[in-house]
Amino acid sequence: MTASALTEQAMKQLFTEARTHNGWLPEPVSDETLRKVYDLAKFGPTSANCCPLRIVFIKTKAAKERLKPTLMEGNIEKTMAAPVVALLAMDMKFYDHLPMLFPHADAKSWFAGNDALISETAMRNSSLQGAYFIMAARACGLDCGPMSGFDKAKADEAFFKGTPYKSNFLCNLGYGDKTKLFPRSPRFKFEDVCQIV
Image 1: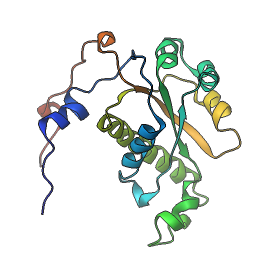
Image 2: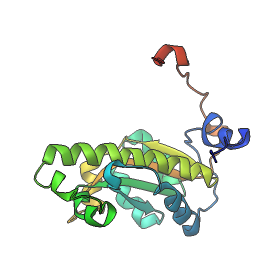
Image 3: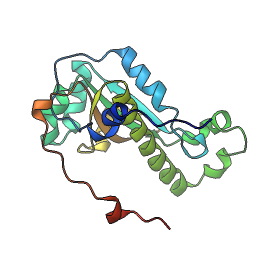
């Protein structure tokens, strides 16, 4: 039996009416909701099931103060106001977990000592997982404000010192204030960027 298409309402929530939010309503996001988001996002595919994504959910005032010096000035206000900031990172030693995650082959040996392949795989697949994360958050009723305007080295020092994790991007989470949305920017038409051959 083939899968059926989602309802139009679901597609609106995930794609056509979902927006990148800059303002937030003063409503908290529960830890249970954050767990649900991750438990959906983790099923997105990665190469050799390598799953390099690591997440720190920054909720407390003290943790936000640690993050604040890493932010570009234009991102400070909206990030400090967000109920939760997800710091999405990549485990640069993801391959150590491949015997458990991908037991069908000696996948760990593909990466050990190959720094270029490790870096490329970690970045591509943690970014893919970050995209799944955004869609999972939207599916759970949250709004998202993903961004890359921060000092990754400072964030690594503040949150990942002594670990093999490196920051990828940030995603503010909460319930967006629609009055603070900018007009939606244009998108390409299918014919502009796609071919069927």
